[in-house]
Each structure stands twice: as structure tokens, then as C-alpha cells.
Length: 150
Image (cartoon, rainbow, N blue to C red; front, side):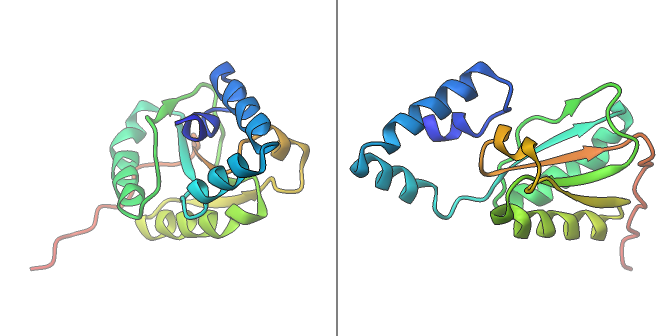
């Protein structure tokens, strides 16, 4: 439970407290092994921010696709002003492969998406491990609808 909370939004006080608890627990070798084994094969949490309410329908489809692959996707957040472009952001080299996977899902769906690597920037230290962010920008219009095969 503490592990899950520690991977929340970086600015939340509960996330920061959970991270502190985990750091203290890691000082106990037995506890550290238990924590490491409980997170070993866990996919990242994907936080999604949209800039317009009209983007929700397409993003809800994306959420379903990502959850079907095993990603944890909390509630979508409407942000203002948000970004102009659409991005998949990863904050650690370990999560790049998952960022690539999410990027491919989004491209296949028709999102005009780019990748951003924050793994070598100071922001990586402020972001919990196991986090990806998706920013759906102002320029992102409705996705092309797939026609059903006859």
C-alpha cells in the first residue's frame, strides 16, 4: 500500500511521506528486499493530463487500451493551460521501454504524439520511480474514427 502511494503525484504530501517511509524501510536489509521484490514486475503508473474537455472520449479509449496492457491509469486530469503538443514523458531510463510502448499505442490510435526524455534532467529526482506522464495538448484534435469492416 505504501509503495502504491509513493508513486502518486510528486507534489502531494502523501506521496512524499510514503517515499520517506520507503527510504527508511530500505535501511533495514530484510525490509528492502521485500520492497524490491514487491515492485519488480510492476508496470508504471500513467498519469494523463488533457487540455480540453472534448478530448475525454478519445482519452477514455486510450485509458482502456493502456489498462488492457496492465498499466495503472488514475483519473484523467483537466489542466489549464496545459501544453500545446501531445507528449509521452518518462523520467528514468528504466521506464523508457514503457514510454516507447505507450507512444506506439498512441500513434496507432492516431494521436499526434512526441516523446520527451526527462531521465537526465533534475526533474527526474522529483518524480517517483514507475511514473509516466501523458500530456494531451491544445493542438490535438479528435482522433480519426476507425470504420468497421463489413
